Length: 419
Image 1 (cartoon, rainbow, N blue to C red):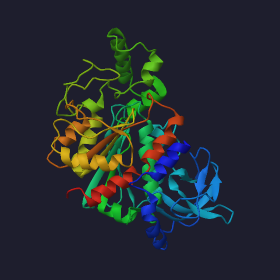
Image 2: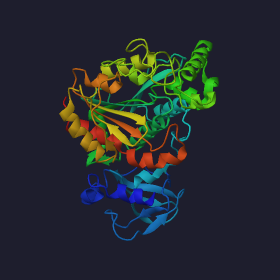
Image 3: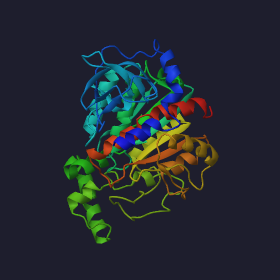
Image 4: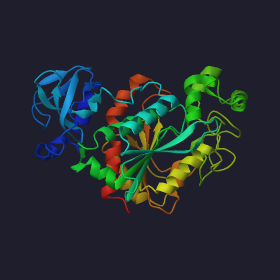
């Protein structure tokens, strides 16, 4: 963890050395909310606090996890000036290791649909002018499908972040909700590359679909007791019988459900788009994974995500999947290869994942957005370095790598993407 922390602090594109002078000059404009208390987390051997904003030299202090601090200046990218709570010690540190004590989004092990709904309600109550909530449909098992909009809904540019399209990848909905909350509570004091959060999100509205597949996620987390519909329960049991008979699984029923990727109807939602629908079919009938459905957009979840995409017409899209610490950025049929080469290089300077090659269209969401008339920059991050679903122990590294992705993508949309 300490080596990772040092590597992230020193990565070239977002190094604080470039901004130290500017940081000091923006003190009045960038003051954090008075009185908010933060605590140190994920620091390993401790969070280094420096006397100088360059974060160079010997640290003035090393704070163990759960130390309480206040942010008195920033953030500028990940740099903040802090005061250790109830002492006179002040210095500069990496804000990615700090978490507000009153954060709404707090459960990062098994993040459920019910917790998502609670967090959405709390965030909307706290930030009614900054966060807009739309229900865009219902899943097959009756769960609401949400679109959250950060910032100015009438902004000239829009970007979209989606997560949780595969059930067992349920660490990612938590990640995007924590990213969202961070942007909300730094809205009036944060800067990214010298542009204030307020200016960014006034000009780039961020549309977030935090949990594309709530039924499948509930099934992966809690087993068949999560299902409300007797018909869907029978579908899931039939999927297990099919996959056992076809040699597609040797797992116990309990483990089979934990490894579930599809929605509650046994459709792999990331194959339920066009073009390329059905070209890479791995199952010929409903299954835990690999069955694309009867037709493109046959599922309420893909219809909802498709509608959000068409209505907001994003110039930038971030998709979260797991696993492998790789990034998909293009398809062989893409109309926007060169613009995505630039965008993906920018994003991979922040998140040091392996860039994957261009695959052939197979009905994924990425295939669909790249086939449209609206130019779009997109990258798909595959978080985690172990099999899904993974445990709490793997989340700190993911957070440190991705905590600034939402701000960075918005900054790119603001300065680079076409109107």
